[in-house]
Image 1: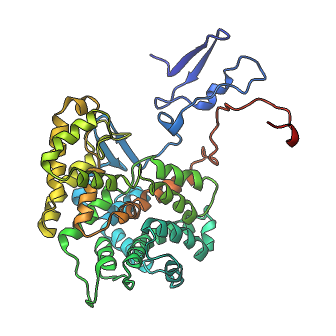
Image 2: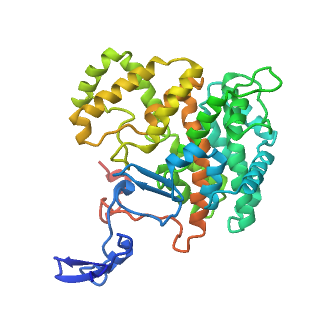
Image 3: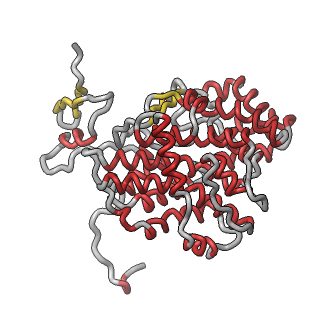
Length: 429
């Protein structure tokens, strides 16, 4: 029987080391025994951007990028998107199991109980300029919530921890909608407890003077599915930020403000906006072939294709593509969809993209759908942050109860000067 070890020979010294293998990994700390001299620090691994380093064990989300598989707590994303509401999936991700009907109704009641914001939050919002970016406002308001709930710093108290998670899942859509209406110059629309999670968000975003807003059921369901698809995605940039900041034992509001700030970047939550700008730049289906050739010539990247993890068709992209047709039946046809479909067709048949495993990802269609719903591009990262709140909180809670975790503190490979003598000012060139 093969031993679960890795034999390493250090050619500098001729010494051989046996490193235990667990779950196809070795512990980086086991490398520290590899030294040339006894007073050496020991060997480290060097992995910029964590491209091949596992920082945690997690039971939340499973991804097989080669096969295009995404599962939450073991359930395929396709089954959850087809059969569940977003709050069902939120309960699953945070609690670990799908809720019974009674548990779901109780959870929905908790969410509705905490959906309102303290009125002082509106004063904070009113301090932003009329053209402030909604994501910047959202980050600031999430951080500010830590001052409204100072007990949140007691992160080791299970009941208090659960309360903060419920508050955040409930309040982030309200914060997002208020930020949108601040930019538009509209009065804030308060939550309606009779509506679903997605329906209420549409109500707070788009209600005008009508006493009772009735969301379109197609758009309501489409939004629910989009929220499900974005709820968690393993150890991405934002989640890594949530865990790293949370490892200092700070409250979840402060940690999540940092995670949202990571999501704000164009390489993370801004990717679907980049896709939309690309489609607008192409302009027509006739221009697609020449644009593809320019991509192949190295002039720029094809936005919405390829993924750091997926080397196959992103399973979320397949689901969103199906939703797009239903949405456009309600909102009217968007010519950008024709450009997107033609771009996808050509790219999937072209050896250049196929050989590089560049397939459409979740961002390729989501921006088109959000635009069809009437959302400006600046709201796209906010729409990402609302559902990802669930994943961030589940990952944060898992990290807090993991006995192997400690405050995040990566090592570095120092490449600067050795010790130098101080030079007085009058002697410097």
